[in-house]
Length: 124
Image (cartoon, rainbow, N blue to C red; front, side, top):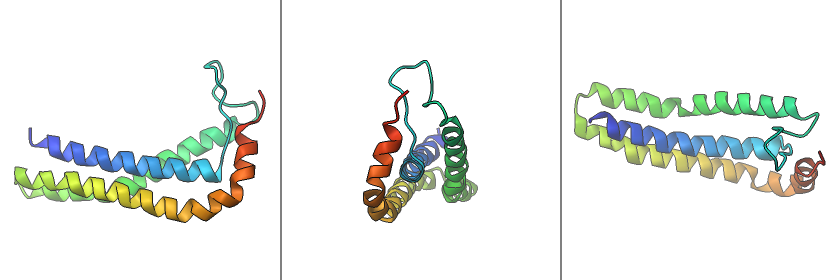
């Protein structure tokens, strides 16, 4: 039962980091996705889509390492109550990464809006 707070803290942090990294790559490398479920992306955009997914996965894994390190450190303390500290730490870290990403992308998003609209509205 002692692993529950650690898992909750890690999950909240991972969700925040993944949301931030996905937002970053959605603005920097947009591609269109069809309405149906027969194809994943528009023809000619599979490479950018798969590369974006791979880089998002690897970047998210790297950005989650500090939370994992804190989790390991708290587990070595052998105090089950200390593991509950990981919940607010994970939440704060996820929010911090999201806020930093949005601050970084705000002006870039507005400048690239026509290009993003063109990329996501390609016909199939």
